[in-house]
Image (cartoon, rainbow, N blue to C red):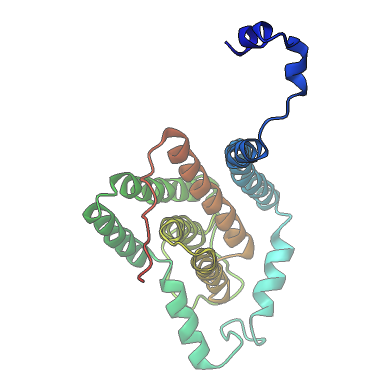
Length: 266
């Protein structure tokens, strides 16, 4: 239509190329295209980041497992375990009250505490009609437990015999179930809680808190003499990889609920 009108008016069609559009229109179009382009790039990067988040911990786990299987990690494990003793294999470093604190921290990664936390969180998510998030949490924790127990039976590594055990244990040593399952449970819970926070600082605090708790639980198992350090390192890697894999699968399949909208009071 515009071309025919310009011809009737005696204007050369090529002159239309020299006509400058309105500045406000161009600016608005450019501004509206920026968020779309940015979001498109973010969506392209997310799968790559998720792949790295799964593959890198798995590669580290495979390397640790190989070192353990070959017996090359024993000197490393022994040196750290002995450094946490006063000279007497039955006496860990630090005052008696500190030993009690470490026992309590270790209990945060036990089946009873993690199971109770998972059930309470699932109940809350179902009450909030966030069924997909509840399913994600259940799948991550139950699947992680099955993987941990299966690997313990497969590797069949005995518990440390170099120092006395401060707490009792009943299963095999590699990988650390406390380290792995605390990583799976607390990282998944932390991610779900962080999604509901409107402020970036709060999201960072939540994720930092669950990572700190996971690290403290793993270190406590070595201090108590019930795990080799490589057991804990392997558990952390495997737990982080499994949590990231579950989260990535749920994201790709669209199984996660929409983030909760947080409104600020006036």
